[in-house]
Image 1: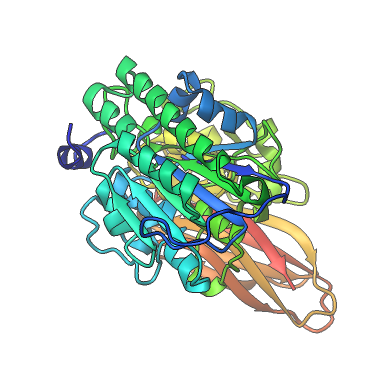
Image 2 (image 1 turned 135 degrees about the horizontal axis):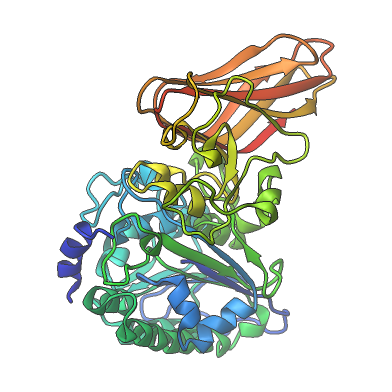
Length: 505
């Protein structure tokens, strides 16, 4: 099926990233000394290759005959996770590749479909543009089988952009040529045939598996070109392989099913443990990881959602993953999925003294959960917008709790933090990721208590909010500790998520 037809099909469909770093010993300088076929000569010892494989499900990649990709996986860290869905954006290529290239989610870059209408690339440019702006002598190359990746997503300052119009063989040949004989510092490469097979035959088809095998051979061709470079031994290579979305078994994407939302990241090299796994790395982390590898300082003013992978650290909630439970009252969540607990991590607690008895067990008061568990409770209610949470997060979901009979009264639960030391400080900064969704009478309030004092209101939520908060808090003279409280009330209503909570002085 042609890409133009797949655009229309994907929009109506009902329903990753592999990062590999090859750490090298400096023994030989790069041989290239001038431009090559229109590509400027690079200037950096750090080199990056980002390989995008459109529409690739990670579960099918693991089952496929794909020795080159699996070799990269075995050599480093693998992170799996889930994309957004409507109303943030459907699982389509336009928002997918824009997210990967810019390091921000669709509610910032503005791309909601494959028309690219409403894009904010001026505010959130692609990673090649960021690199060229910070280091004008850098050499950047984009080769893409889906032309909009080269023509639209990377529409800024990349030195050379080559749209190949659905020809993966030519895409691989061009990329291999420039990588072997030229000297790009950062290369972004896009393959399309796995997505073509998904649309034509379905994600559960033999043709889909064959397409993964075919692309794996092309990946091997490109990686061998990197290793054949005259200066390879003197260079520090970061290779990233990613996807923009998954596919349904029957074929198609754009919806909110788990198969359509699949994504993955694998990173191999210095700082990454071979064979290790993570659940807190996301597609938005690719751009800042590439930029840091190329020596570019990440400016907070850019307001990126992603972070360099080596700067992502687990929080207290993430430590709960080994103790997560399977469902009790929920029926839509797969029976084998472990993804919730009300047992708080050390120092944290939940006050349910105002909660009525009964209701859905999993959601009675604040709960610690994972995306794959929580979003499966009921699709299409905007839980898929909780993109800024990482791994395990705290959630108060009055909507799901109310789906089973309970005592009189509304949902009313408070999440309490440990006591943070603040002695000697005059101010502190509270930061946390949050997704607050309104659907009926509800309140969300953040409080701070210094020592044994009274509650002080820090932040109130009464309208939808999705972001990463940073709030300045004045510390009273003589105060030694501060405790945070997140209180949520609701009558049916919607939900509130909180993650990555920190209080810094």
